[in-house]
Amino acid sequence: MIKKFITSSFEPKQIAFAHCDLPCGVYDPAQAKIEALSVKACMEKYAASSDPDFKSRAVAIKEERSELVKHHLWVLWTDYFKPNHFESYPQLHALFNEATKLAGAGGSKGTNDVAVADKLITKIDEIAEVFWATKK
Image (cartoon, rainbow, N blue to C red; front, side, top):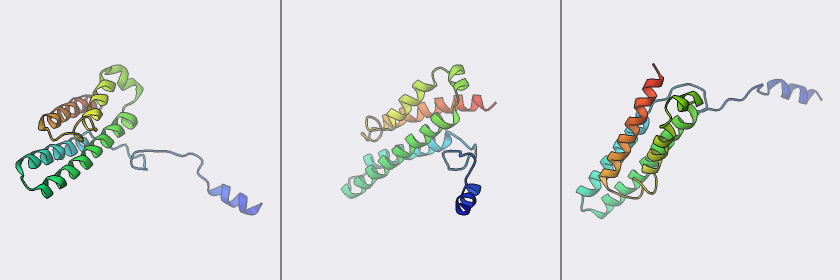
């Protein structure tokens, strides 16, 4: 009985969840863009090399960075943007859907075409434009 009382005294009364396990409120599309620029650089280095081992490493890193792009976009989409943002900017859902697909298997993870990376970077820039407009 006493043990239960002591244990329940230290249990949290409210639980919060955030992308960094601490509701810091720090969000920035620059994180996704940096990773997308890395994806593009890996594609360019892949194309410029004739070394199969180097090319294999470039693909592995590109795929890892593509996954990070998706992660950073999902955090913005699901944690930062709220219903009022989607009402004010009805294109947001489509932008995020297109951008995450460009970072996925049908996009930068599945190709070494720099044009795909450029499209991804353009989508991230469009999301960033909306993001910064909501911060004003």
